[in-house]
Length: 70
Image (cartoon, rainbow, N blue to C red; front, top):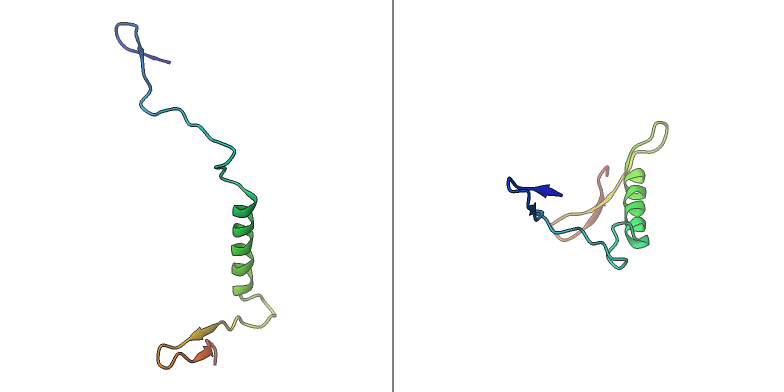
């Protein structure tokens, strides 16, 4: 509680934070999305002794599918 020079209570600048059960930061869906992104990043990386990642790309001319290392 903050007081002014007259000893009166000063209202806070920000309203109190209210977190409902319907609007949680760490829901099962958000954790699944993060895990999926981490898994994709892991498989994009090259690992020592393993094959290099060769992602498929689409070229703008004719929309042909090719791999990066081809």
